[in-house]
Length: 221
Image (spheres, rainbow, N blue to C red):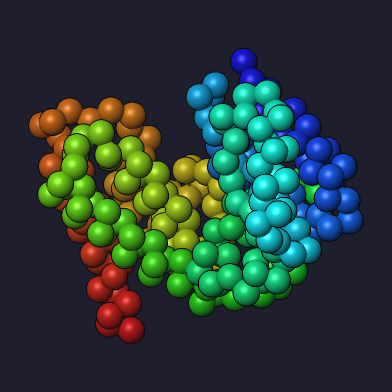
């Protein structure tokens, strides 16, 4: 079984050996950061350099390919200035869902304010609404529900933060800060691993209703 954190440490050492002082930040995201990774989980590794061009991407690609279980690698790569200029609604989740392995994201955190959580909520709800409608119409509705609920979980985190100023790492903490029954029902749906054809329409109805209500709330502001 892959030791995900040992793998990340090895890649960090390789990146430092190759890029040296050009490395501004390295970190972990996703299930590995949350301690919920399984053998099949990807390893979401973040690399931020002082600047980035395709030569750097090529070099980093070779570093990743030199790793054992390199097929598990994914993640985010950027130059520092590009990251600091990133849309703040995206930076909200990036900042809160990234564990530092090298360097600090304090410069990113200093850019954020409460309206950025609302931006993440607005954009995330729109994405879930569209994805749920598209999936219901054109795709394998039962198979897609886990991914829809996973996306909705990040939106719920922004929703709770926008309402309370608290960023909740786990479902138990998050439930205490959600504003309504549909939000809590979406959180509960995220814990379900499989869905029967009979119950699938109810889940889509919940997701569309919840995301739509969030969107309409912005229309009323």
